[in-house]
Length: 235
Ligand SMILES: [Zn+2]
Image (cartoon, rainbow, N blue to C red; front, side, top):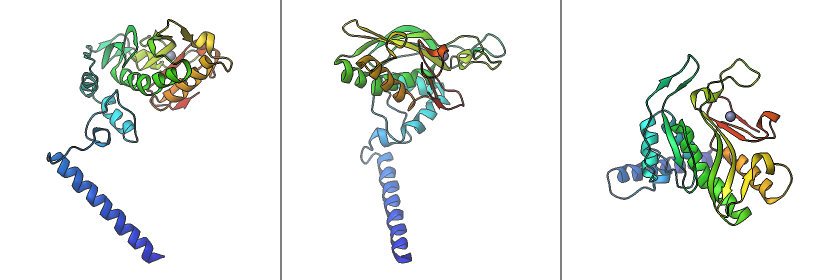
């Protein structure tokens, strides 16, 4: 038993050593390490997610320049807007004007770049695949109620994540045929639009700390709230 454990430990150490050596050689330019599995490069917003994505996204959260660079790499040039402080609780910092996701567009909205990057990855990895599964056509527009709003959480004295543009309210989706799928009209039931909305709600929880849907409370009957506050909730 102890021998096999020692063998296992040796084998793991060997594998780790080989991986570290291979990674070192790749950094020296001997071969190309796959970007998706390189912890030192920023996430590709238009690529599939993997176990390193949350770690890579943290580098975007803590550094707006990294976030801008990730958008540039995905072929969408964005600029970090100047910081503006409205009140003690309400300010915009590290925001961009978001108008394009990987495929869909949206009415231009200023939001924290970290939120925008997650919306981009969610749209690419979750929303579009779900749209082709349920409707056989892509989403061409993300409908929303905006990001920045200087207010408290309803019924509370705590500032909303909207007060720092660290949240986004999604109200629905326009498909290529023009068909609209909205949280307000289509959440209930078991028809394809309802299934689609539940799938994209569930998938949003992989990218955002907080996702609140019509299941949460009546305040959210017509939108999906997503944010990157410290709290974690998927409802
Ligand atoms: Zn909200």
